[in-house]
Length: 47
Image 1 (tube, one colour):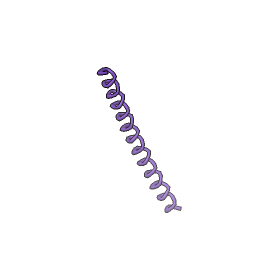
Image 2 (spheres, rainbow, N blue to C red):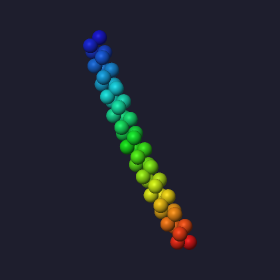
Image 3 (cartoon, helix red, strand yellow):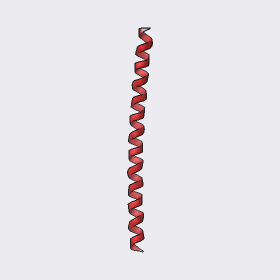
Image 4 (cartoon, helix red, strand yellow):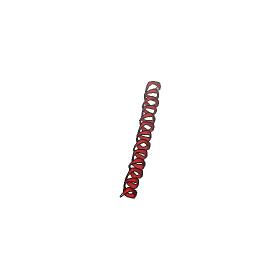
């Protein structure tokens, strides 16, 4: 049973790592969207 618990711990650690990467990805996408909004707003002001 000990090996099973260590495998579960490894798996949960991997899942935690993946969720952290997904959060980073979402943060990056959000910042890109914010930049696009800002650029489009600036373009509208110019017109």
